Image (cartoon, rainbow, N blue to C red; front, side):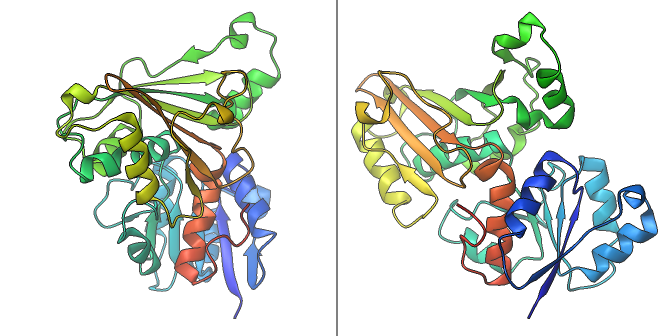
Length: 314
């Protein structure tokens, strides 16, 4: 059986990467819309209702509009926007979240792809809160350093067509502390309140590292950094795309420096644990266009259609 796939928003950064992955997958038919008809309501509606799976790579308002066009019970939607990530009627597309999440995705027709920063944050924090190590009221802070591709075509153009001196230095943003990933970071990590989150964009194309400092004196149980590494390694031991790096291993650093682009062009995510008995540092490393976007979307499609989970992915 061939499945019909439509990417609504096929010309965006995530849409283009999804098409790259789809080109490697057999038994599917990728439907495309003519560029001049991308905003034609009736043409989009017809394609959406003809497809078995629709990827939405659109702004929030446009994703909601596309979902409203569905008039049948067969079309499955995988949305890459923030529109439905905390909506209880949708399934959060993070298969590794817990032992039930993959099955929820498999039987769902509405799946939201996690935000890139949220992916790195939740995969590091959720096991520690759910296992009773970190209290849900813990005042978490974190920062993320990411490539400019995460800002879409406008930011890519700004970096690649300008010689402005300030673009050569990392730039913190969302300093009103209202980043759009905060609701999902709070909900799916298990925190009672949102973390204090500072994203930073760097002058490079792709790659993301989310860094979370922790103070064991505020934990519910006495654990060391090594204990945290072992807990995370056990939690993700059967996950093909998640790798928990051996504790405090300098072998994974480059002359003491952290290479945040090591997972680029893959759907992999690495979790590092640094520190000692007084202070712990968690760092997650992944491709903001891979596990942080298009790779995660394809992984969810594979689960929903019963394909091998890594089909079309690296």
